[in-house]
Amino acid sequence: MVQKVQPPTPNLIHQKFQDTDEMAEALRLPLRITPLVLAPYSCEAVQLNLGNIAFNFTKSVVPLRVVGPKPAEAVFFSFLLNAVDEQKFIAHNCPINRQMLFGFDSEREVDLVIADSVLYCYVAVSAVLLNQYLCLMERDDLDARFLGQNQVCIPTTIGPLQVFVRELYTLVVNQTACLASLTFQRLLKEDFIPLLIQSIPPKGQLPTTSQRPLRRGDLVRQTEAFLEAHLNQPITLAAVAKSIFTSQRTLTYAFDQILGISPMVYLKILRLQVVRRLLKMTVPGTRTISAIAAEHGFYSPGHFARDYKTLFGETPKETLKQ
Image 1 (cartoon, rainbow, N blue to C red):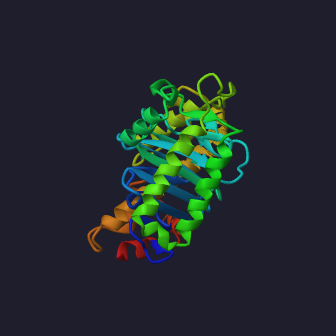
Image 2: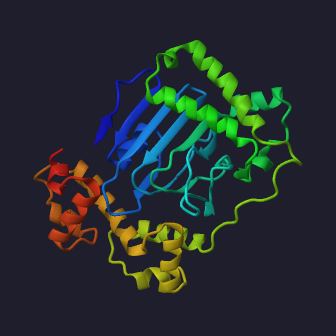
Image 3: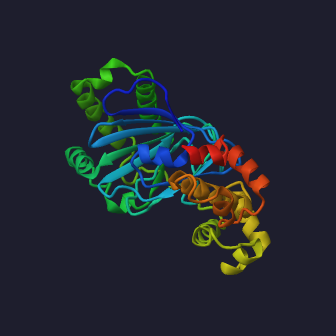
């Protein structure tokens, strides 16, 4: 379900989502978004799309796992706008804090663990537009090699960038009239992109410290791939561990460290999401809810219905009727 917070304005999305698939569709990104707790999902999403640059803000009431491809024609710059506990926001197995700019390697897919209540911002800039400004500002050091690092810690220069984006966020959520002005939109681009580039110190002045990847992150990715390929088959923790050549204890620790959830609870949430998608596409009367659930490992109708309502805030029958 989608709740529109205020009447829409041109090029603007400001909604609260209770469905992860609807949120990904609204933002026009082919992402898989998975809640990391068995609890009702709700996420506020704001997007101001100006064509060759788009500002995106999200804030979820539950932690999320987000993976998927990025548009090839854009470069993503991401940062956090409020404090977050250590190892609660992770990008490509690396902990992220407020002093970091990250996610700008176009060759890497989105790979995030997003903590609850974190105001997360990513700005998608057209590669053509970004290169124009890099040439104008003579910043040939911000080349493919730099972007390939995917993250940089800039504690002394990121502040003005965050202040700028926070002020824009306030304008957007308040539906300020100036957002519809083409002149304002042009000035917004002309102010933001130089500020973004200036926030990254020239080569040789960048801090040498960077976040090291968390151990066992690769185990989580391998496990996710295995689970996705076997969602409609019987799966045990022992079988998962064996498939990636590790122990059950090591696998459980890896999931707790990276996702804060056990592998089998994560599997349950993935399966519940698949069942929900199938129920949305099923014509009432053609298939039973219990049959669809059983095909995905839910053999107790009572337990399935309870977990389904806990996660989605509605019963399977209510989803089917919609």
